[in-house]
Structures are given as C-alpha cells and as structure tokens.
Image 1 (tube, helix red, strand yellow):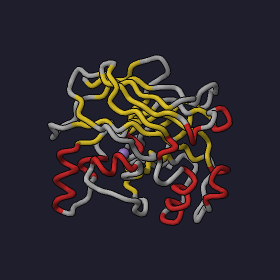
Image 2 (image 1 turned 90 degrees about the vertical axis):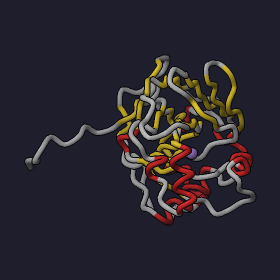
Image 3 (image 1 turned 180 degrees about the vertical axis):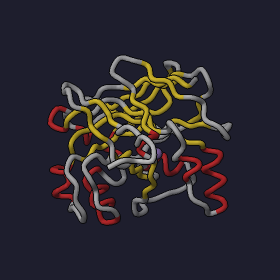
Length: 231
Ligand code: MN
C-alpha cells in the first residue's frame, strides 16, 4: 500500500508502569453529567445522557510530573476548563450492558475537556453543532492511563482542578448522574465501541475561564494528575 502523502502518526497516551502506549481511536464526551454543573449551565434534573466527539488528534499528553502546554485557541475570548475522569476502552462492543461494562474498561486517566464557551453558547442558541466550541485543535489534554486494576475505587474518587494554585472545581466521581457503567451502556447503543476509545465522562461544577499564562493542575484520586499551561 502506498499513500498520496505520509499518513499521520498514531495518537497515543502513555500507560502508568508499562512500556506500551495506548493508541487512541475516538474521543467521546458526555455532556452535563454532574447535577451541579448542569444547574450552572441552566439545566435541571436527570436527562438521558448525550454525547459529542472530539477528533483523536485533539489529544495533548501531559506526562507525569511535567507541564504540558496548549496554545490559547483562536476565535474565542472565553476558554473554559472542564476537569473530567476519562475512561479508556480496551475491549470493544455494541449494546454493552452496564453489568458487563467493567470488562470493557482498560483503565482511567485525568483529562481536560477544554471548551470555547462563547462559541459553544452561540451554537446552542442557533441550534447548530457544538464542534467549533468543543472539537478544536489541542482541546483534549490528558494524563497517563492507569490500568483499572491499579486505579483503586474510582467510583468514589475525588476530582479537582486548580488554576494557578487556587481551587476552581472540586467534587467526587460518585456525583456522576450517569455512572461509568451506565454511560458505556448508553454510548455502546449508539456507536460500536472499539479498543482505543476514550470517554470523557463529564465535568462537575465550577467551570470557568483561563487566560494566557494560566496553569491548570488537575487530578482524580488514585490517578496520575496533569498540569497544563496556557501559552
Ligand atoms: Mn465536558
């Protein structure tokens, strides 16, 4: 097989304690999956989960103990952080039942669903797709993946992000409206999951803007944290 140009490199995420890197297939994201965040966005109550995607090459790897850098993106004056637990799928499938979901999970990581909030809000008002607000270049920082068996009790883990050392978001994974297993059940009814899929499971309350020069430090209890600087 020859190609018209060199195909892009495989996007991958390092795995804690392993030499092998996790190759990324797709990035799925869950919208409004913590009640207090749904409220701050002007919504209430439990609605069926909904999903959007980011391109795999939106990944920016934040290596353990290092500071990754993202550019301040174009077209926005309101770049928001959304700290999220990321689920890495190791075994694919469709119509996966919540009770079977754990066997499809490879591991977990800490991620940031960076959002051009002004553009997303414009698109919402006009009933247009969110892509320009969510799926832009370098919009998906992520830390190393911890294999599930080594991640502790992720379902009750604390989740937080600080900006320049001050708390912005602090909650607990137990407050997910749709838990990890339920999310996989819903998602796999809509798409056939593949090994390499990442699921950004949603963000708790406290989303807010960052500006050039800010540094975000995020974590989920039991996982390797991430530090990301906005250039
Ligand atoms: Mn999000």
